Image (tube, rainbow, N blue to C red):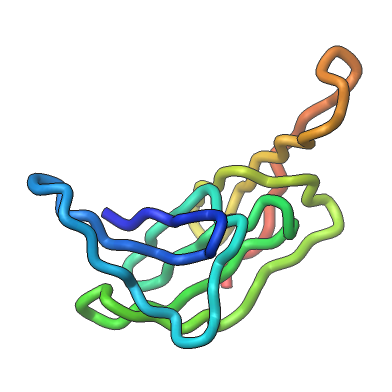
Length: 114
């Protein structure tokens, strides 16, 4: 299992039985404001909510280190918080933090997987 520490942008592997954690190193990069995470093989997608982007990370085979290969940005993102996929598409849910709930429409933004 992989989790994110949002405030500093670090990733950690968590052993499901023991709860022991090990940092997944990203070199000098980070995924600050990380929220929703999707692991697809060795490609990890991390939604960076306040940054309105999705970091795309290529992980090594042991899942102990990775490289941010790109960040997906889209003008329709409005504080996305989670992500899922279907085929070659990603679907990010906009939270629109700070918008008044009774009058706010929420949407799911579809972007291409990269």
